[in-house]
Image (cartoon, rainbow, N blue to C red; front, top):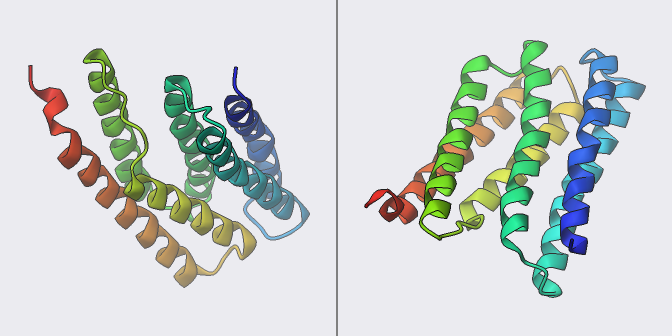
Length: 176
């Protein structure tokens, strides 16, 4: 197992700690929310570190191409679900995001059956980065409604754009 993959697995392992501290925060500013923010930032930074190591030290693997975006999805969707539970993140926005994630995962699975691995594209990386930064903003300054709506708009817009781009670039995977 490569160093990059081990770092990705650390990100996955941080998700339960993040969820527990988010739950303890109750969605309010305070010690538990800031601990949650710290865990989320640390987990988000591992995304950049594992990618750098994988590319720089020739540790790119098919398993890593699969696991890295999955770890990102698990982390960000965990945060969005907590915000949704607190009424801060609308369920319709979460459903758009989940639909895109399932659709792209289905596309990747279809591609794998044909011997093709679809790595994260540029728009997918922008979506992930803007989502992670936006969720950090929502945790850093909870309760500012206009700021939350700006973050939600950016997350939904980049999610839709990257989903369209994945399908536009890989539609041939559906041909027999």
